[in-house]
Amino acid sequence: MADHLINILAIESSCDDTAAAVLSNGKILSNIVATQEVHKQYGGVVPELASRAHQQNIVPVIHQALEMANIDKKDLSAIAFTRGPGLMGSLLVGTSFAKSLAMGLEIPLIEVNHMQAHILAHFIEEEGFDKPEFPFLAMTISGGHTQIVKVSDYFDMEVIGETLDDAVGEAFDKSAKILGLPYPGGPLIDKYAREGDPKAFQFTKPKVDDLNFSFSGFKTAVLYFIQKKTKEDPEFVEKNLKDICASIQYTIIGILMDKMKKAVKKTGIIQVAIGGGVSANSGIRQALVDAEKKWGWKCFIPKFEYTTDNAAMIGIAGYHKYLQKDFADFSVTAQSRYKI
Image 1 (cartoon, helix red, strand yellow):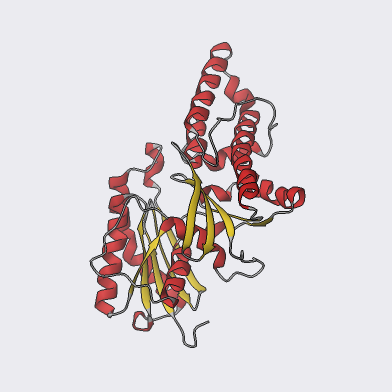
Image 2 (cartoon, helix red, strand yellow; image 1 turned 90 degrees about the horizontal axis):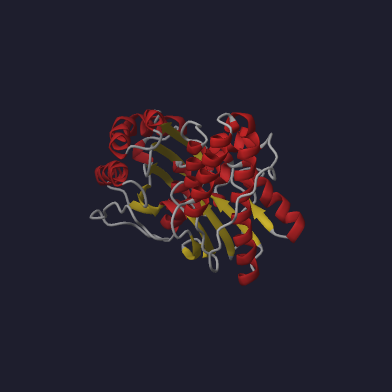
């Protein structure tokens, strides 16, 4: 631990949430998120509207984060920001703001990889939550990513499995759309699944080599299944919604857990952590709790507010980079694709 206060302001703007957090020696003092409602009517995130909303939200969100943390910007040690991956227009807002603020305050700038931050969220000081020990396996599951990562140190990460096409969050949202549920549909599938029979309908799991994933065939299977059944009975979805949701969720969780079992067997690492928006899913969280009992894994499930995009995870990644004096140059630019 540092012998003096390291105060970091963190900024996250990779998709449609504008977020800012203040951390002092790795402890969260504030974590503010402004969500954008505008995308709901379009059934998905509209990049142009997202970047405009970030421009409107970024100043008030940062102001609120500093105020809540009771820290003056003169007392900041560094500014951490999401460099990528994400939507280019959204990333540019956060990147430009972070650069100009750090320049104005004459303090270091720290660039953070959004996907690394999802994993490092497990190191946020939080009562009642254990931290994984290195090495551990992390499964990052979100609307844009599905990866299995071997984590040997804070910034020594290796992707050992990933999706070849669509991400798991997309599989949830597209399935929900097929069922006529509003965007974002993933949480709604989770909600209805709790009251349905997970074995009511069977969907085949895609056969993909090694530790990689594929969800495009699964989405097509759901589409054809619903088309066929609604032809026979136009009210099929209405009558069976809970069972359909439970069956979809059961299949997706099965796909994820099969690969995780394979990864544990292959690496011999039994410490397993999850991160990313889809790790808020209650079925996935329960599957990991069960895995501890069944297979003797040690599982790490993040607090809900650290699963979706937030700046606290950017801050904790920034804090560990600060300790290593790993600062960014002011010529740094946003990157929509940014590998771990």
